[in-house]
Length: 373
Image (cartoon, rainbow, N blue to C red; front, side):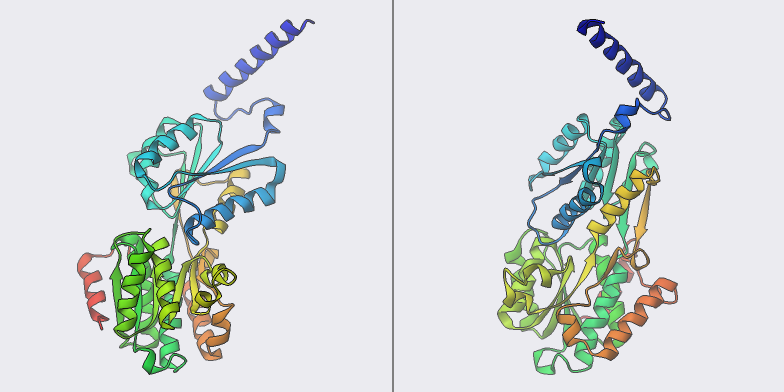
């Protein structure tokens, strides 16, 4: 058989296979196609180096590659901070041969909802966001939302407990702080859990609350955190992405405690800025990396629940409180036990933590006013 004939036959067979696959989604392609590595890409709506969300997403992609090796091809694409470039990037990637497209954060939800229906052959997985499934054409989108209120409840116990037992002396301050990126449900979900956890230890606890209005301005975060510390806040919780790094810088400057978020921020800065790491009491982690690997595991098994959102919390080990490093040293055995008991109670349902999602504005304002210093 001539080379031309071979090529013609191969083209015909591939064409038949493609038609079969497009026309009948349940049919498999040829055996050699099944052996090809799956292609997975993570679109970063920002840049790496945030010491938080996007770096965790990158770690998730690395974990997928480490587990599956040559069976998967991975890539990370930084789209930058210019939001006008995000949708074109999604459209370009969706036109390419990627099988599974990952993204993170609520800021990408509307783009996914617009792009995904035009590419039903692609699978999209968006972490820490929801999409409008009610519109009816998002059956190829899987979403993860985190029960950050559960992990923040434990952070509130730690912050209030360190004050109550005198580990943080009264001359360091008598209130705890909260620095949010924006006054939105996703951030207030942290806040409600944080307040309720603190109140479980110290019912009369006061909480200084500030919103920066941005997630990428560390200078603004430092300014707001310094104002809290100088007004009597003994330990502050940053929930503000790169803005929140300013909280850690402020804690280092004034010699007061801070709580990290999303990733283990003490461990991240232990080598590059040990003086900053020394003041990170613990971090409330949202395990983006764990959730991404879990999503790929399900995808590889053909069990990824596309077309729906999964809410993951303490029971799924998707959120938690770092108990190593500084916390292991400064928290008393009694406080550690109190945190462990609360964690078990949340998992078994005996402790109910209020969520910031769907919370009536009047109730949210009443909660914030009840702890105002």
